[in-house]
Image (cartoon, rainbow, N blue to C red; front, side):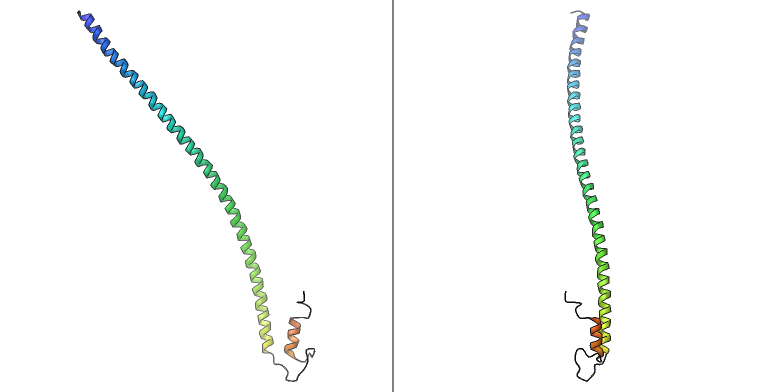
Length: 133
């Protein structure tokens, strides 16, 4: 064998292994590229799902805020009504205490007798027919 043939044969063997190695490298690179693209697509789908869930939560939060503000208004109205009722209660209680402090006449009169101060005050406080509804 001549030197040219030996170099050619040697270079062909080396070139063959280099081509096989390059082919495996390209196949591996393509496989890795494909796997990474699948992972990226999966991450995009998860991000899309999370964005939809976030939009639903934002909608629920807005609804809850509206409900809370409506409840706050209802509480304010209820507090106002309760304070008005308490004012009427205190006024009525004060009036009844004033009536209790009056001394009745010892003479036996009837209900229409205006000389009894307790009866007179009670009739002023609760006029007849006012609660017959």
